[in-house]
Image (cartoon, rainbow, N blue to C red; front, side):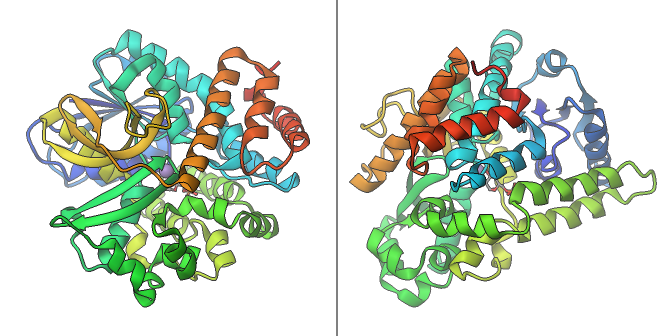
Amino acid sequence: MKLTILGGGGFRVPLVYGALLTDRAEGRVTEVVLHDLDDSRLYAVARVLDEQAARVPDAPKVTAITDLDEALRGADFIFSAIRVGGLEGRANDERVALAQGVLGQETVGAGGIAYGLRTVPVAVDIARRVARLAPDAWVINFTNPAGLVTEAMSRHLGDRVIGICDSPVGLGRRIARVLGADPKEAWIDYVGLNHLGWVRGLRVAGRDELPRLLADADLLGSFEEGKLFGVDWLQSLGAIPNEYLHYYYFNREAVRAYQQAEKTRGAFLADQQARFYEEMKRPDAAALTAWDRTRAEREATYMAENREAAGAGERDADDLSGGYEKVALALMRAIARDERTTLILNVRNQGTLSVLDTDAVIEVPCLVDANGAHPVAVAPLPEHATGLVCAVKGVEREVLAAAESGSRATAVKAFALHPLVDSVNVARRLVEGYTDVHPGLAYLK
Ligand code: G6P
Ligand code: MN
């Protein structure tokens, strides 16, 4: 079984490889091809993987290449985890937005639109090549903004592309934990778009345990989302939102905290990662130790400004291991071995949410087997959530249209229609600001 990782020089690749190393079963991945445009990043990550594989018998064989078509040929699974424009691009996405007084974040609001406009053309090119060179492969998309990018790729690959994110899993796990339930036994009623979803119920043995949590202020205030959103707001909503909804429900506070931060998240990570990749150039560097130290610091500081704005304090130690590699592995196993399982994934709607058309990619629990991921029927969202989901899907569609046509006016429309961008004039200035700093947006005319 051959797995190709696009963005193979990326910092999170060792998480995926580490998950593969735990898989001893028949039909597991035996060959990993890392693809990246940057040789030195490939070299750095390959060093970490090499140390991970030491002392593991039959560890998947790793090769690293820079030719995309060669990487795709013969792949059974393709993970796409690329970052167009690098972390400097992410920092610019944040900076330009914050200068206009709106949110600069890699997946939400103006920053997410800018990142999407840069990424979609590249993702579409990859999808076309996959359709030609590896038509039977399954594509697992981690590339952010994950919902939008998955939808762009699905126009060429249909249901053979599946988007993943660790945030709904992490959320479900935290809720199960405070309720004293086993996350593996719990059915999580979650739906929305990527980074824009709500847990409306958590059933254990057929019984919904969420009302018990919502009724207990102490319990509710004891975990990440309770601290971030506040007990009263969760009780008013009657649901537990994905942590990324903090950017919507507390937008003013989040923007202010981001503006006041010494460095934006992207700028912080750009520096942190540059140090790591630089260190990997030293022949005597302890690759795995350096990687793990860098990873721990990254996880401890995740959404730090939001937590500070909310007075939420440090992250819970149990929340530090993200787990997206586990979702990826579980998904691959279910498909490759026809091991039926349920996972929250980004797939085409197919009538699940009646307010969206059939091809709209949504984030929803899916039954997964050898035939892929099939969304499970869920109850409709309340009106306030439907409003946000439809508005943001409308924006995503404008981003896809702008990426296809190269129309600058359509790009302005995408920004202007986003609920977190408060003026058409701001949208125009954002397009100017972003096209000035991003060579990857030169296609907008
Ligand atoms: C979560 C999200 C991912 C995102 C990551 C960002 O895991 O679900 O989509 O890539 O956080 O973390 P970072 O350390 O890059 O800010
Ligand atoms: Mn995510």
